[in-house]
Length: 299
Image (tube, rainbow, N blue to C red; front, top):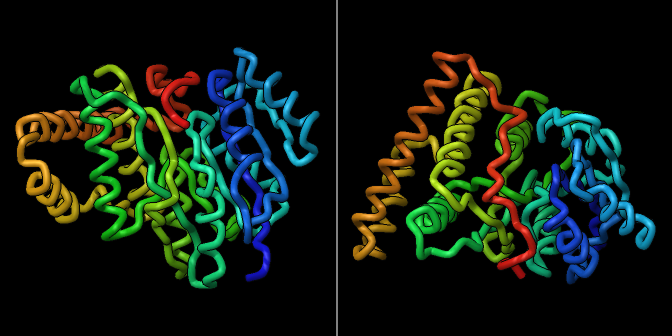
């Protein structure tokens, strides 16, 4: 198989606790078909030493580049800055607070050997402890995400795609889903690769959990209205199907599962209120600080 070259974009706001590990992970990835041409880090108004860490990597590796934004304009705007600079036709975007497994980039990029594939995504696995209710909730939602993606691909946290656009809507609060919408509009397919593992960290307290889920629901309503696209998690039939499968597999967790579903419905109601009643669009959202990877857990 011929080499497939890609440009990688990393998006960070105050990610000093994880950005070094992330760059180390990328630079030591196990690659065969994939060839990384450049790694562009877009740092949005970081004040915690993120820029200095990236600058040190840029001195060591000539393919690493730092771009800075004076103020936070939202992740979608940061992605657009990356797209304006990326030189390859295969792009891969990564949130600054996650860690891919050693072979994840290779798995995501080799999917494009098939010309019908427009975007690929892997499986996020949270590092949160499941001892708490919030930790269980985080794991449950990503397990349901996995089940849904097996039925109808739903990409998140780290995705690769063909550069078929100069920009995505800058006011999108759900950037990966906006990219999905563009790819599908070009009559190309999404590919979910469950063995492409992405380690992340979900919220560690109920306040941040609600904040995050509320914002995502708002963003999905915006996506439907502005790009006429719905992700699989907005399909009630699919959601019921994967929830039932989880109950059958783990009946002992039924009470906790129902509690999480009730909380999710509450968050969706809040997000719907924000969108329909308040006209709010959280494209430059408040950071859920407890969801930051701070150098522990993920390998």
